[in-house]
Structure formats: structure tokens, C-alpha cells
Amino acid sequence: MLYIFMGQSCTGKSTVVEKLKEQMDVEVFSGKDYLRLAKSESAAWNLFYEKLLEAASSANASQTPVVYVVTEKDLFDKVCSLENAYKVKFTASLDVIKSRFAQRMGGHLPPPVEKMLERQHAIWDAIEGDQTVDTTDTVDPLDIVKSIMQA
Image (cartoon, rainbow, N blue to C red):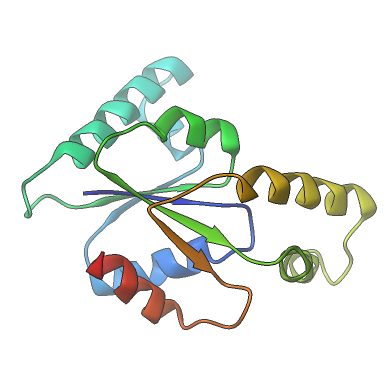
């Protein structure tokens, strides 16, 4: 099984992955983690893509599921057409994302970062998933894991 957790930063993807790892054995890749698979980027991507294809097409329940966490639209574009991948879109209101990001930056959100978050929000807003998780309001990550596992 292949799960693609997608969406902009500060929407809860990593938090849910941690809870998912507590519930089941999964192999997790995030962003450009695939670069560790080979010395050249193209070779690493090819190996990684084959791994994703295998996970997506696996009918073998004993195979370890793969979770790919994506925050960059260009990386999502490379995997969005994988058949049988379960795509979970994580979202939150722009104000909540800005607040969470500001906390990561010591309480201050510089104007260029704020503009970047606004652009990212508009980009991700137009993308659909098999399931959408809105973390604007406080949501128990374990409840999200359960809903993903039931789907």
C-alpha cells in the first residue's frame, strides 16, 4: 500500500505520520529523502519511483506500507498519477498555518515568509486527494490515523 500525505507545511502531516508509525509498521519518506538511495539525483529518483510503484501495486498484505510525505507541489506532480496510491490532503485555514509557522520561527513571521505561505496555500487549495483532513480545529491525530486506516 502506498499513502501519499500531501499539503503545505504546518498542516499536521508529520504529526499524523508519527501516530501512524505507532499503530503499524510503515516505511516513511519525506520530500527529497529519496536522494539517499543513490549518488545521482536521477538514479535516486528512479529507484524511489520503482519503490513507490511496487508499494502502490502490491496486493500483498504482508508488505510494509510506504508513506510519502510531500509539501512541494513539484514533487507531488511527479507522483500524483500513481495508480492505487491513497492520497491524503492535509489542510488548515491560512491564519492557522501562519500561526503555527510563526511558532516554529520563534513567534515572528517575516513578511516574505507570510507571502510564501499565502502562495503555497493557493496552490494546495486547488489540489484534490482521496481524503481531505482539515486540521484548522484541534483534531486528535489518532482519530485521523483511524480514518485513514479505515479508508
